[in-house]
Amino acid sequence: MPWEVPVPCSDMPWEVPVPDEPDLVGLEAQRARLYADLSQVGDFRRGALSAVRRKCGKPNCACARPGHPGHGPQYNLTRWAGGKTVTVHLRPGPELEKAEREVAEWDRFRSLTGEIAEVNEAICDVRPPLGPSRAAAPDSEGQKKGSARRSRRRPPPR
Image 1 (cartoon, rainbow, N blue to C red):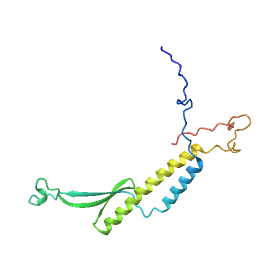
Image 2 (tube, rainbow, N blue to C red):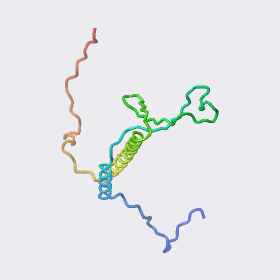
Image 3 (cartoon, rainbow, N blue to C red):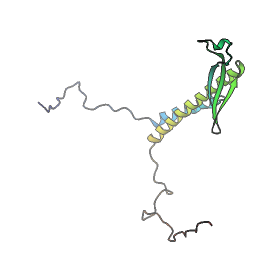
């Protein structure tokens, strides 16, 4: 039998449950929570921290031996500023700890703003359209109006 007709039975649902659409009130509450979290973000600094080990190049130094990791680590904060990559060397201790906190807050800021953007897009998708706007309404004929005169071409500069 190539075509079988399904036989109704009591344990087979005929209607597949559709997942609930996002709730506008719930999305707005989620956005408000994200805005509250965003207001708690502390001082932040764009960039990335890295620890670098280097070899000095002196042939008699311990770092010249095979398997030696090199001098360091040297801690760098690298960021993009004015179209260029800027690297700042940081001293271990309070200066490095401060930069670590600031970069972590930058990551938190970026994460929260990304979540806010996603929730706002969901709100825009769910929110019902408002009535027709007077400013956006086309004229009675539905055509754009334009100037009857054509612009005059200018001669090329000498």
